[in-house]
Length: 126
Image (tube, rainbow, N blue to C red):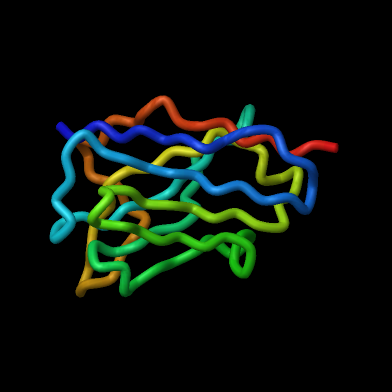
């Protein structure tokens, strides 16, 4: 089972930026879409973004469109989430996971066997 490790979180002021990284214990770059998810305190986990295996398809949840950018480097086996103009509502634990691909496009649907990693905490506060 693939294990994902998220990093790059931290404390940032509103309007600031962070870049999250997602690496995996094993990586099949021709196979997996990767999704980013977040869970704010007291709330359910929600999907944020996804990218397909070749980086040609991306999707974003409405509240982060225009502020977040997902990318991947298959040589480094890493997926990134560049987060700009951060808002207090972005405060959450962020996770990545393999997601389903439909007609070569990424989705934000995880597989039943998905096991969440420890996540990386993002706190946006003045």
